[in-house]
Image (cartoon, rainbow, N blue to C red; front, side):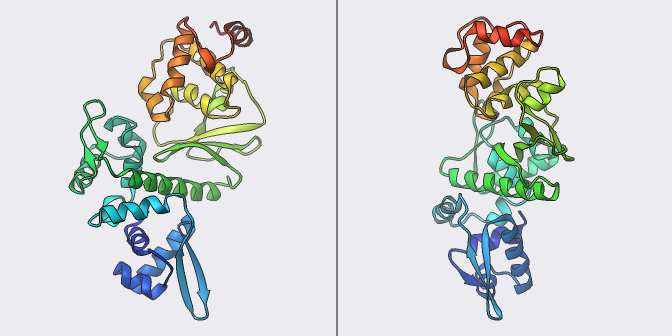
Length: 301
C-alpha cells in the first residue's frame, strides 16, 4: 500500500468528507482523493457521493479494530513510513521464518532488507529472538494482523486482473497465497502449480474438481507441495495421508522450518513420524489403507 493511503487510513477514525480527510491526514486534496480511491479498490473504505461532495467511511474489514487499537496504544507509530510497500509483507511474516527466507518471500535485496529492518527497529517494532533472529515486538500483533490483510487485499486485487475472480484463498502468509481455482481455468502468470495440482504433474494425482495454485516470488519446493496438501479440502485424515505419500516419495526432505511458515508444525511431525515408521495417530488413515493408496502410485510407505 502507498504511504498516502496508509496515512489517510490512519486518520480515518470515522466517516469524513474528502476535504475533512485531507485535513486530518495532512494531505493535499488531490492526494487524499487518490489515497481514498486506492483504499476503496482494496476494500478498506467506502466512498459515497452526497450531492457535490464525497464522503469517505471505513469499511467493515477484518483488522479494523486491531488497527485502531494499535494506533491508540502506539500514537507515535507512523504507518506511512513503517509498513508501506514491502514492509507490510515483512511485518506480516515476522515470527514465522528466518530473515533469509522472509527476504526471498518479500522480494528484497540484502541491502533493502537491512534498510527495512533498520526502519522497523527505529519504530520499536522488532525484538531479537535466538532462533528466528528477528521477531515482532510484543504488543504489535494488531499491526501484524493489519499487514496480513493488506497483503491479502492486494493479492485479491491481482486475481481479478488475471481472470481469477472466482478463486478461493485457502491459506496466506505475507504475500504468499494458496488458491483454489476452477478446474478449467488456466494457471496465470506469477502462479505455480500448488498442492495436488503439482503432485499430479509428478504422477501422484489424488483429488479432482478443483485446481490449486500457489502465488510466491520464491521458487516453491516439493516440501511446499507436501505441506500445502494439508491445507486443501477435505481437511481430514485423507489429506494427511496424501501428504505422507508425497513425503515418502522423496524421503530425504526435511521441512521443519517450512512447516512453521505454514503453521503446520504438529501435523508435519505426525506425518514425519508415520513415514519414518511410527504412529500417525489422528492425522492419518490406518497404515494399511495408506499403503494401498500409495501402491497405486508406486510409492512405499
